[in-house]
Length: 196
Figure 1: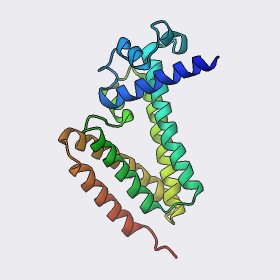
Figure 2 (figure 1 turned 180 degrees about the horizontal axis):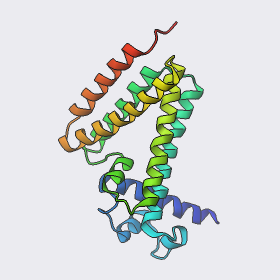
Figure 3 (figure 1 turned 90 degrees about the vertical axis):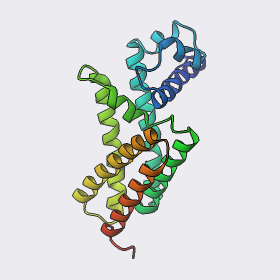
Figure 4 (figure 1 turned 30 degrees about the vertical axis):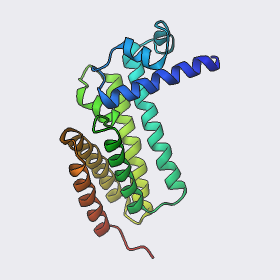
């Protein structure tokens, strides 16, 4: 594969990621994606023989890769859980405001519109959410929580983040996400062992 091929593939994945954030899988057509990616018509099936679904899976995997790399960096730095999670929610709030409440999480958007027939999409989403929960559980365990409790709380953190993001997006203001983040972080403050 040439550098040009890699650039085109990356542009297609980026265009799909942005489309998923703003309009969902079914809200964007192939011609629009190709135009946004500045890619000729035949190139989509060259890179993604499975068409739009395979491209969506690649976009989901790229999004998850971005999130997990950031969490891995924080784990490598031995970051404290509470400030890290506070920063994660704050970044989500900024993204909402910057996008004028038109950009959500591509994972949640696709998950909500997927059906039982969308096995490849659902598998990519399940693996992605699992990878994110695993990193957050490690972060919480490093903060002193027992592993089973850290795992359960990680599921709560991801669920709170995704649900609050959806609510804030449709409300058109940060209130639901800010309130959810504050409540979750207050709970974590009570559960986390004191720092020595």
